[in-house]
Amino acid sequence: MREPDNNTVPVKSLSGDATDHAENEHNAGNEQGASGNLRGALLMSLGMAAFIGNVTLMKLVSFDLTLFQAIFLRGCCAAVVLGAVSYYRKELFVTITGADARVLTIRVIGEVGASLCYFMALFNMPVANVTAILQALPLVVTLGAAVFLGETVGWRRYGGIALGFVGVLIIVQPGTDGFSVYSLWALASMLSVALRDLATRKISSNLPSLFVAFVTMVVVTLVCAVLLPTMEWKEVKGDTIGLLLGAAVFIMLVHITLIRAMRVGEVAFVTPFRYTVMVWALVVGYFVFNEIPDTTTIIGCSLLIVAGLYSFWRERKIKRG
Image 1 (cartoon, one colour):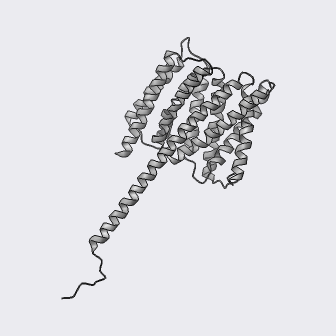
Image 2: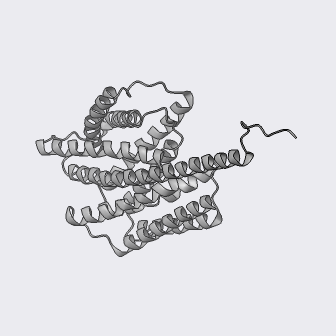
Image 3: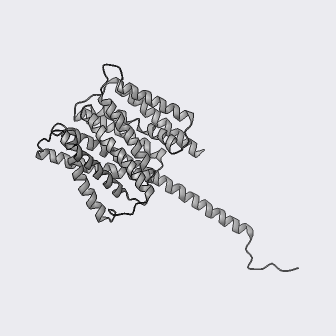
């Protein structure tokens, strides 16, 4: 009988090593996903705090400047800094594919609509009310992802979306004495932001976040420059310039953090952290502008938050299943 070759490796050992290697790769992938979700959640929370910082300073500016004037001057400050930082990091001149160009164009259109409509509402409504209407955004993004991106959404999440829209109706109060036409501007802003976020999810990783933020800011500023003659140009005072510079810093943080958050973490995990914005909105509204939200706003916003959290909980449960 032939002796076994000393160089032969038992099959069991090979399969065991392969299994161990596969398990190690799987565990590493899980750790990377968890780390990405944590970073995304922190970035989203930071972006929401910066968003309210920008809102606060811009609302203060609204007492001295017109709408397009305020957005234009803030945009000039932010675009110069973003351009300089992008140039320093060698991210100002990049090659854009045809697909990225189309998606970036859609994103910019969404941002232009979001900025103009939001500040039109903000300059004429309490901070908490405008922010509460925006809490329908995650639900609209979920609906848009199902309709336009082909993502699967079950009847339970559709039910959550319907509940969220009931919350919007409670806040807006159509057909009642509490209705404000500026609520429609807030709704238009929310739909524009949804378009922007859906487009952001389709931008490839080849485009740096700084470049995307810079292009967006430049276009928004140019649009306001074109619209400037439609409103009176008011004198810009020294303290107003300081507020605009602060708003420019905050809006840059908003663009960079939100773009990064949508890229590094799972959408279903990261997006619910948008709701932290309501905490900041209530605090700022009360202590800075002496605004106290009415009962209908609180009820409607609560429905929106519950519906949104349920929708994302269902999405995570389905993915785990």
